[in-house]
Length: 306
Image (cartoon, rainbow, N blue to C red):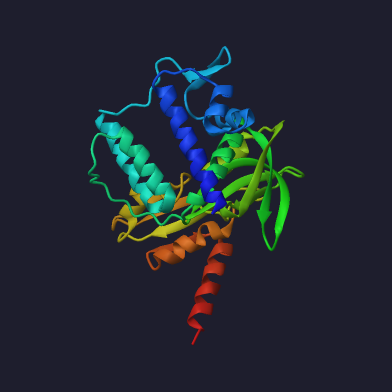
């Protein structure tokens, strides 16, 4: 309960600060610390970490909104559609995240009725918003972090945060182990006590491409990407034209009956096997044989069950 109170205080403070900045006020750290009864260090953290994504700058020891920027209602049709979609995504996350997001979006949008429906099975991370904001700041500035990670017990880890990612509805922090630069995936809700270090790090283009092209949390850094050739029946081919399996999907050939063969690059068999199983019998792996054998073994094990 104490955590919830801390979370609400932080959110309220940040909202008031943004409102003041949006109204053209120039804000001093000391004055804000006195107003909210917190330390000047806390206010500095608000500006340097929690509000880093907003267009605010510091001039003569005062924080203010950058010239030409303002959080205001949108009259653009395109912007309204984007906001509607954002609202439906936040609704699927649920919990406090949705209630807070709905209030914020309501201040920006010009209408209450949302004609868009989106069904996304996303894990509720309402209780991790403060940690997420800290992680976002560290990812943008490429700063190493120290935190606690819960396995059987809490352990201390020092990592290089790369991305916050959602796979199959669950949230993960993708990061490099600072000791050996091995890529790891950390379940986001098991991360706590995040401390951003002064030490920074660099990423590589190859690593960025690996993350960008990943299909599921099964992707691997140590494996070179390899091609999987998949036959897609005419019954479902249109769906994979509309929404490819991944960004690496290319069409190998079209057939007269409407079926097609596609190529997809993966780094682990389990990136593609669950997808093929889900769409059976309309999807069939043609190459490589290693993936085919694993799917066949799973089918035989399933049919052997009583």
